[in-house]
Every structure is written in structure tokens, then in C-alpha cells.
Amino acid sequence: MELKPLNLPGQKERPFVLAGPCSVETEEQVMTTARSLADKGIKIFRGGVWKPRTKPGGFEGHGEKALVWMKQVKEETGMMIATEVATPEHVELALKYGMDILWVGARTTANSFAVEALAASLKGVDIPILVKNPVTPDLDLWINALECLNNVGVKRLGAIHRGFSCYEKSVYRNQPMWHVPIELHRCLPDLPICCDPSHIGGRRDLIATLCQQAMDFGMDGLIIESHCNPDEAWSDAKQQIIPEVLSEILSNITIRDKVVSTENIMALRKQIDKIDNHLLELLAKRMEVCREIGQYKKDHSMAIVQTSRYNEILEKRGEQGAQMEVSAECIQKIFEQIHQESVRQQFEIMK
Image (cartoon, rainbow, N blue to C red; front, top):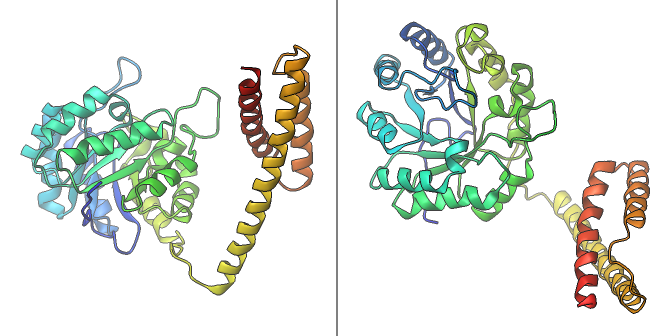
């Protein structure tokens, strides 16, 4: 993938910040919020002009009328302006009113037909385009959207990590699943990634912690919802913060170096390599025993999966892990993967 720098204010220092209301509601709301954010040093104003709603009846945005107010923000404060686009018509109007940055929402990223239509409308456009992760943790789908845009000549690309929907109840609105953006960075190391703590948390009291976690994971920027009167917001009121709180959060973030070259950590990493090699050797020995069990099951017409034994392993290993300061949940996930590979190998023997 051929990429060019986003060239956003604050990108060199890390993090670059996009801030503004979830929805562009009124001219007064937009200008009051924008002036306050500009006074706090924010250089990029974000605002939702078109709002896809999960349930019917919610505020869906003012469309072109809101773009007039966004343009006014740019002219009065000098801030760059950014909004979400979901259709070629959105792109056309956003560019008409001088939008500096566009982002693709999670629902759109999950729809390959919609991404292709957007890509066709963005051919030859040289402004930063940020792509949110799809609603579900599908890394290939995320990369596909980025590649689709890149293939039509969009080089100033970035990604937005906004978390993933989950059926189970959680403290978060969307599960962070930090390993997914980490893997995206491994696959596309030159791609800037910013974090959306507002949509991950869904609550304003979680935003500061999530911002720090994003920086600890080496992310490049933050996109945060900020409103002059969050409690009266027309959408996502619980996750928006006033500009003063945003400024406080940003001033308290600790930025850690991405590159570490000290001898101490290199020595520790060598220890990790040795331990990993030992783990792999042990895993290979375990699979060898599993294959022997598979042969025994075949010879004695036994089913591959013995549920009671599997449950016993998960329970006992989880307890052992907790005693060794490794969470039972982590141990369970590891042994679920080991069990899947054991079953696969025994199935090959059965065939």
C-alpha cells in the first residue's frame, strides 16, 4: 500500500486531536463549541453532519445546512474541519463546502459495496481520509476498505479504532479489543491509527483512561466528542465532554516513546525469545501426545471430542493460571486455541 503523510496539526508531537460534537445541531452550538476548543489549542474540529442511527426516530443530522456552519467554523477560527461521509453524495457536498478531512464510519466500512462507491467518488481527491474499524472485529474487512481507497489513488489514509460491538453487557459501549488495531499496525506499519475513546467508552468518565491506554499502545491520534452542553446533546449525550474537560485530559496524558533501544529492554526481550522457544518446543511435544491419543481413539472407535475432559482442562488450567498471576480468562483463551489445534490434528488421523 502506497501512503503519504496525513500532515495534520500535532501529528509530529503525537497525538493529533480531532474534537467536536457528535452531531452538528445548531449554529450557536457549533460556534460556541468551536470557539472554546480553538481557545484550548485544538486545531481540528469534527462534527457529524449526517448521522446514521441504530434505531428509527433519532436525529439524523441537518445535511447541507450543517455544512454551512462547519465552513463558518473554518473561516472564523482557522481550524481544519472534518466529518463522516457514507455516500458519494455526501462526498460531493463535503468537498463543496471545503471539508479538510473525511472519515468513513464503522457501518460503512462493513459494507464492501458502500466502500467501493465511496472510493469511486474519492478518486483524485488529495485530503486525509480516515477509516473506522467495522462494527465486528474483522481485520480483513478493515484492511479491505483501506486498500479499496488506496487503489483509486487515496494516499493520505489513516485508521480510527472505535471498538467493536459485543452482545454481552460490558462497562464499555464497544469492546476495545486492542489486539486488533495492534495487528493492523503490524500489517500496515506506516498507517497512522487514532483512537475514538468516546465510542469505545460510551461514558465520559472512561475517556481519560482510554486516551492514556491508546497512547500507551502507540496510537498516533485521538478523535473525541466534545460539546458545549453535553447533557442537552441531541445524540450520544453520555459520551461527550465539555472543552474544558477535554483540555484537562489532554494535558494529563503521558506520551511514551514508540521506539526503545536501551540495552536493558533488549536483554529482557532476549529472555522472552528463549522462553517463547521453550514454549513452542513444549507445545510440539503436547501435539505429539495428542496425535497418539488420536490414534488410540481411532483404533477404539472413540469420538474425537471428549467434553468432560475438555471442561476439566479449562477449569483446572484456569485455576492454575490465577495462582500464577495470569488471569483465568487469558488461560482459557489459550487452551481453547490449543484444543482446537489438537482436535484438528486428531481429525486428520481419523481421516
